[in-house]
Length: 292
Ligand SMILES: [Zn+2]
Image (cartoon, rainbow, N blue to C red; front, side):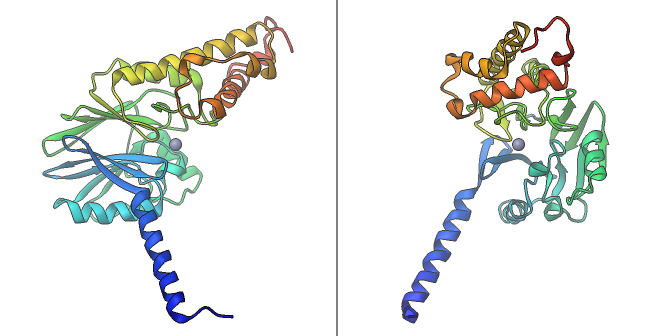
């Protein structure tokens, strides 16, 4: 039996309302410091900076999120989008570029990130401008310093330092308030540590991540302490001949148990470092490391 028309209409309106609520909750723009803003889409975040001469945006995240962002930028600000900078090659951050495309909008990425998008025939806007080690983009009274720190996650992953607001934006290889993602797929743990040390040696006041919380230098230092504790305990365990299962049973690191996903992901983080030491450092081929 079909429900009465009035009931069907109110059900439809109710669902529509719920969908709009969901969209509003899923997409958020926050002013973080001076002219630097954070765009949140679900578990993903990007940053953008607004100047008198236009807007510099970063990761589009995905086509739907980027389309929402483009409309919001046009609605809130009276200046055009001028640059879009990809943090790295991974498609869960770099897709949606077409939605931000337009006349006079330049797309920027590290040379290796662009090369990966081309080699893999990625379905996003391919960058126009690349760099190798560092590049500064100037727009109006502001600028953003882009820096490559070597391998850490994906290909061509760079930090973005917005000035004069003094805000640092890094995606994936620094995450505050939460454990690094599951089994560290695509990560180079030594590179993450080295790159994070680089960031800590830079002067910045506010950190914005592509996931997790915003924070300050002390928060980034605490994240680095976790990476080092995780890496050291897995490496030392493997050097002593412990198996992955033994490492996952032994290693606890309770001083970091306030991090979100600590219980769910600690064993996966251990697996990630263990596998990296085999894949990248050939621990399984070392005669001085006991087999297990
Ligand atoms: Zn990510």
